[in-house]
Amino acid sequence: MPTNNEDKKLIPSFQVDHTKIVPGIYESRLDTLGDQFATTFDIRMKYPNTEPAIHPNAMHTIEHVVATFLRSDEEWKDKVIYWGPMGCLTGCYLIVKGHPTPQEIYPLMVRAFEHMAEYDDVVPGASPVNCGNYILHDLQIAKYEANQFVKRLKEAPSFEYPKAERIITEKGKVFFDS
Image 1 (cartoon, rainbow, N blue to C red):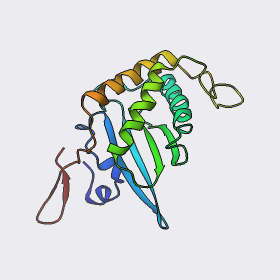
Image 2 (image 1 turned 90 degrees about the horizontal axis):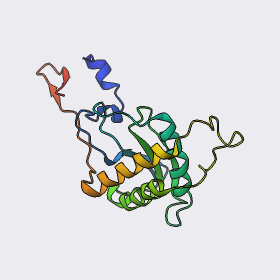
Image 3 (image 1 turned 120 degrees about the vertical axis):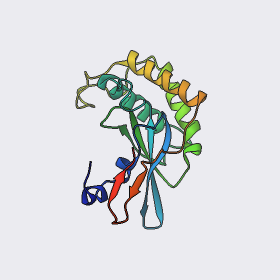
Image 4 (image 1 turned 135 degrees about the vertical axis):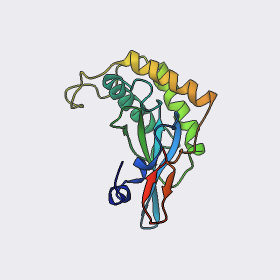
């Protein structure tokens, strides 16, 4: 149990109740850069802590193929700032210019993951010249994971984070309910 001071240091993404989150598309944070916005999306592919994480080789392939797709998409290519895996290997982060909603990102993610699920070519950038670990790829498992995620998105899209509930005592001490 974190102390009151430790609790206040939790960044917003660690305040999400990971025991309740489901695969979906969530706004993780919004940053202001002068008069511009940069929005970070949590593209959550797996149920955290309850199902196996995505294998590192498959996640690396998803990173390469989906990044190439996003940076080539006519509508979004100039808005994409970053695409990459979460350290926990349960999903990826997408950072875009502006402040679109998760619902506005949804069609893009469906297209990107359908592309990944159907991809049957050389993994882009998977060479010793272009990649820091070019042998760490698994196209077949990446396709499987993408297909599973597309099914989840289409069957039950989720766009709202479950927040960790907090109890605050009369003396101001903060406790997590979850």
